Amino acid sequence: MILCIETATSLCSVALCDSRGVVALKENAEGRSHAAMLAPFIHDLLKEAGIKASELEAIAVSKGPGSYTSLRIGVSTAKGISYASAVPLIGIDTTYSMFHGFISSKADLKDTDMFCPLIDARRMEVYYSVIRRNGSVYRETKAEVIESRSFADIPASSRIFFFGDGSAKCMNVIDRENVVFDNGFKISAVFMQSPAYEALQAERFENTAYFEPFYLKDFLATRPVKNIL
Image (cartoon, rainbow, N blue to C red; front, top):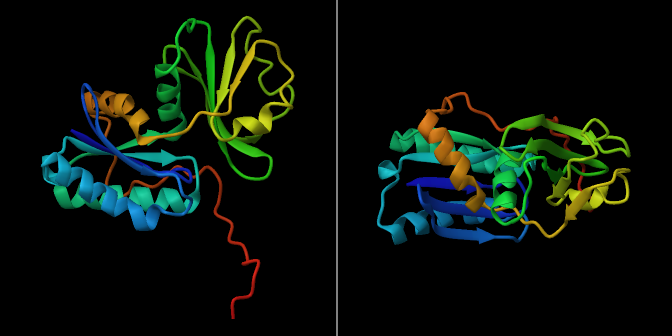
């Protein structure tokens, strides 16, 4: 089994998966719950499954992009379990995980379709990538302010599916035919099952000592709005 940890956004989500699918899931969508909920979720999942961390095939963690603090919590926890239990560590690009979750819920997709998972990066920016139907990457993950012609290089004959919590920003911006927006898509650790086992089979493991989240942007500290002193 693989323990999958998803903390790139406001959702704290942990799934226990095997090669056939998801065995168990615990998640909380209340923002800023990661520090309080992540360790108990992991403990409960392993206990209910009757498995020790050292018996896992790997630990998989959503490596970003996403929220700076949330990613640090998820990656730090995954590294700690991986090191202490001597099991491999797998890092999954968050947009790639989203892609797998999206296509698994859709029927009648075409080989020419393109998929654009979007994560809100605050202000007018989004984190996104563009992925082909076969899973190959057309455009690498980046942080960008989407403009009307941002996807002009993609043939008009290809549908582009936009989904994730950053898609609403783009609905009235993109000037292109043949687009589909899904603003109801929700991220989950469940979506990591397929890419995690792909990585396990290919032995694409992270170095536990040096692995860091994929931030894309520098962390900017801000002053609190209220003076609590």
